[in-house]
Image (cartoon, rainbow, N blue to C red; front, top):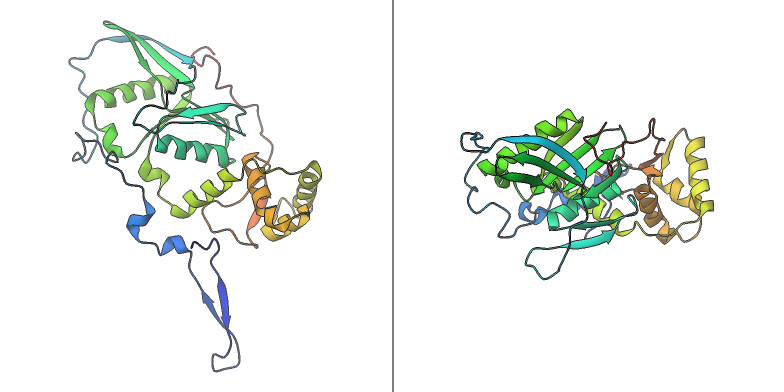
Length: 298
């Protein structure tokens, strides 16, 4: 059984007539290391698993690449008859169906869906093309996203860094990063090691993701916003849940649903407790860049 919240236990009688406080740690901090990460036979690249760093990019035999284009990509087609894991789900944040091809992509998708830092995203939503001596070279990254600071980020997600050690693949990603930088778009390599770095965050993200469709009323939204305004922008989780009224068993789920809707936020890296701060998500200072248009035309 997993206990969501570390407990503070008061034990009477420490010999001086005052209580002794004992703190039970977060269960994720005391788990066996092997229980904190996913395995699988494809966690490491079968050919480059022994390489400790990305190799130098070899350009001698590569064709000339020119005429770069960055265009919106259509959703990938899923047949559901392949060995690789696939998924297709509706996103509350983007208001669109999100389709992916691996468990790691889905884990990254959950991050984008839950964390209010991300304003909009689309899996496989951008296609990069070059005209080369041997024809058109195409590359479709795993996700394009816009954050609350107005940045546009393109990410490639792999199980481990070993998948970035293939020299030809490294060349492709290097070219993609250079071309995207000219369009003021960041390029990031995301690995399963990154996504599983914090078991507590991973658990909190999964819990909030599961609650994202929880229904709440306009009256409850107004009650939470009014409380946060009175409290200067942040209030204890317990007070926020009480302000909603209704079924207290559903209150935490509603807080999670409101976070996925970018109405509130809380620390996803710590265990939830009634005295945690829940804060309002400030409005965007500028209109986010449209990630679904042709991004090489400015």
